[in-house]
Amino acid sequence: MTWWMPMAPELPRTEAEALRVREQYATGPAGRQRQMALATQAAAMSEPDGRPALLFRNEPWANGAVWSLNPNPHLPASPNGATVHWNDAIKDQLYGPTAKARLDGEYLDSLEGYVTADLNFRREHFRYSTVPLTFAPDSRQPALFKGLAIYEFTRWISEDVHRLGGLMFANSVPYRFSFLVPWLDAMGTETDWLSGGSYRAVSDSQACLWRTLAGGKPYLLLMNTDYNRFTPDLVERYFQRCLFYGFFPSMFSHNASENPYWQNPTWYNRDRALFKRYIPLVKQVAEAGWQPLTGAVCDNPQIFIERFGPTTNGVTFLTFLNDTAKPQAGRVRLVRRDAGVPDQPVVTELLSGSRVAPSDGGWPVSLAPGATAVLRFEAGPRFVGVEAGPNRALHLTIETPAGLAQVLEFSTNLRDWLTLETNSPGQSPYSITLAQREDSGAHFFRLRW
Image 1 (cartoon, rainbow, N blue to C red):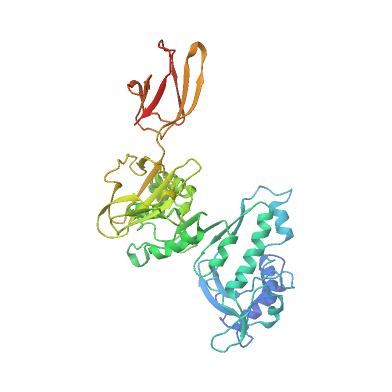
Image 2: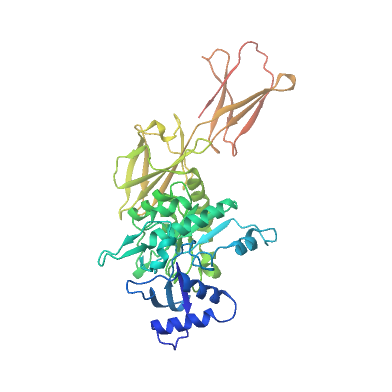
């Protein structure tokens, strides 16, 4: 959607100079800049008066002119604003038989085009558009809307990448253009929660927009901030909030370019324990699949709830967030039978690893300011296999929440029960072998916890 064209610092930042530099690139030696210059000649967007949609920026990653480009892959020029990035030669290089490695898919950066002009008035582009025209609200001149042109490109490349068996991942989405989401398999954005020197997390409304539109797809955040000041206590608050929404958290650079976090061992070793603690929890929650209806309510409206699951194994997670500056406590109860929670579930708080016993028809939740809690709901121990062994021994296979203390009991009449074993298995499923019993008749077994 843009070409960040480098210009020497001493050159004037004028349209005429930008056109001259572009021509130099277009007639210069073969390479990426020449390809981009040629594509820009065909795909550059126009202002209402016919001048190129152009601005000048000095950023860590580029100093020069920023051209707004129409990414329509159907423009007749070769290369155009789409095929300069994705064409048969690139596909063969990356996915063909001589490719150096098998890629998982393609990444689209800054997909919503934050510096790209909103409207394109270049009339020669109109006939090739597969999306509707719109008009400028002031002059009422017909134009192509940036968002729909991006949709045109995203759908085109997504369908091709999916045909290759790849995935599509995009950055800085969704904000304005929710209609891009169906063509993407994973999404994320860059953010700064320490802007201005004070910690301020993204709003719940913005996070809910990302979570809702992404649905069950992965959503990822990159923290762009001053990591010397983004100390471990703030990193943990960041990770906890991401856990609530099922977002995968990470870090990039203070200015989205220089001195990246992952090239500074002081920072990533400082936070290593937090990554090791929280990323597996986020993975558990996110892979269960976000659901729009929680099926649960809390008697304290200051405590937010999200639901993930049930998984194929019948596990459901409820996440809780205290978005206030004061401690909050409440009791959560289930209000829908379709929430995926089994009857008499075993409930575990993931961060502490402690079991949570039901009380007054619900489960207690206590949260420090800005903190998150996660309750894991799953079925209790159950027999999943019975097998007779040599000498009339009996092998029982049991699925259970790991670490749950449970008692195996035996009866011949379903009235009088005898304790056989007490276990707190560290893995599931596990097996118990029982020796032959002398008594004859029916034998009954049950698990109690």
